[in-house]
Length: 148
View 1 (tube, rainbow, N blue to C red):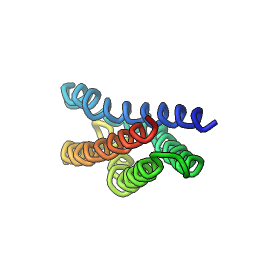
View 2: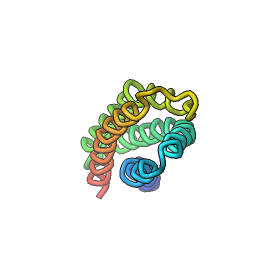
View 3: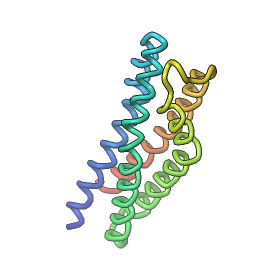
View 4: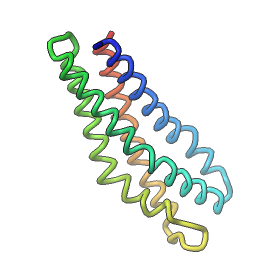
């Protein structure tokens, strides 16, 4: 049973990390290469789409890691799993305080109503996102290290 939980947890967290890595290093560079209106519209659409899915994925990943920490409390590597959970908590806090407010504004923008500083706001979101990606990569690395 614990092995099944570990596989499911690793896959769910790993896919989340992969999506966020792809946003940072694949999708956003593609969006930024588009003409200005298309760039902003792509960011807005991505914000709406991923803004609906990622909160569930982040919380679900955190719950799975917490369940694994509790279920495997007396197994080797639990300290790493608990640390990974702490990093996932940090990523959720970062999301709520730093990224979601910008995303909630950005997902409503159109070429007609976007603010003059929309690019600066997207650049700030990207900087926060790079840090969050580093945090969740660290969490995933600790999780995998704990389970091998």
